[in-house]
Image (cartoon, rainbow, N blue to C red; front, side, top):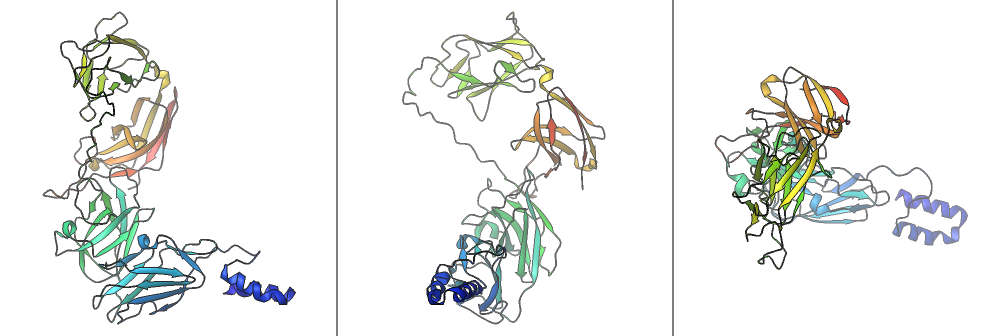
Length: 471
């Protein structure tokens, strides 16, 4: 309203006869005044019917008025009503008013909160009324209980803000499998969550994807649980939850789109993971075919020197997950030439197709100068936790090193930047282990903490860093 009045005042001074037209146009099209500081303030509540924090009411409609014109963005997706309603309220935003129609019959002596997330913005600048909440009670008082905490993915230490935290009555042990949550809230970009206006009661606390069921019905879902029931109080300590998948999703088997899949082909084709003609000293040599294959033990693959003398100590195996890939492992020495001999019938697919001819793959291993060296000194680690330092690229653990009271001395590392993570290796097996909610006893996942200091490795360079781990 102030913006329209300001426009009218300017027009009256210079062009009185045109003032009416400008007055109508200025307000109807919501044109901001020219000049002056940019509006950076979000819209705020100026009136509500019933008024915010009302007691002893059973409203069917809420009228919420803001100080300026608003627009709503994905309001149904953003709105969280606590406790949950069977039917989603109907919400309509017009001009500077928000109208909420409640379809359900409300429970007696219950505090209801309507959290709109980031759905409400002003028209002109799009300033967001972050986490705007309206609350009332059907009883004589407002509940003031609160639960707050953080959520992180156990395996990576990262945050997934698409997840939700839910509460289920402690008396119903199977509620997480059968019923939608009574209360739920979202996680922000920093991994934090908070419940407000809770009644004094005891709940079980869980984390789930924000899907339509809001129930735990699949072990491959991201999931977390708190070990003990939570007693709601006006003030609470921060709770830390760690999300895990009880089981990994099975990848679908690859199918060929080749119409001639049932016909014998000219010869099996494959790709290799060599860097040009160079083999990485720290990796297996991989051969990947177009279809799943198997070995013909009568004509084995052979790794040789340049004189085709068979070498001892190499192994070959087919990937159990992707049976079209062969791993060839050997303790590679730097700047050494090799021949890999693939007899014509050494590899077959399900239709007994073979290579078109015996193939000899010639390659040389990389030099040590292609790698960097690193000494990592660590302060503040906990010996009781069997901590392991993980070097990560593209969300995959490339290397891991148990932490002891001595510096970690790494002689060969591929150049590049690595994220550093700290694994609390409870069972001391050197790898991250998931949790289980179905088992007896239930088991929490092992925890991985993302460290703030990255590791940059330069080729043919000795690197040294000091890590200080904060507990």
